[in-house]
Length: 219
Image (cartoon, rainbow, N blue to C red; front, side):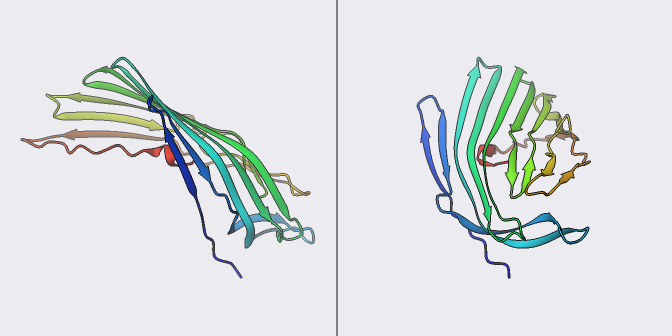
């Protein structure tokens, strides 16, 4: 029987006069979860996938956001999240586990304005090796880039963006725990390229939309 999963999260945030933001992310009390992970049977040649109740998953971390600007041509923001992860399941077939790992995530967003009509964007992300139950996830990283050109009296906009330029956003998963030996090689093609064109007719005025703060999202 699968038990219900619940979640408790507490955040403490501190902002300095330099607009540097520190956020402490806490899951202070372990919470029960259910998840599916592969298991190599010791009785027959088979890989078993079964949804099971885990004792808990727990995360404690600290996030720092540091924005900075160089003149009027370079806007940048650096975000780092350091967290301690613990996954425990005492009833995982004949292979109970209680695994712990320190994980670092970093993201760097940059906008370069060559003039009022032309801007380039560059974003990088990386995550150190992580765990998911009995899985080991290798280091992963991505690079995105884009360009935006406004012309025809600010009525026309042409933009292009390439996400996951090096096709490295999917981590390699290995299982080397308690005699288990599984290697999962992903062949996903996740690189995308988008091209957008817009033109404003008459007296249409573009509605100002506040940018979403994505720094609180984890990869």
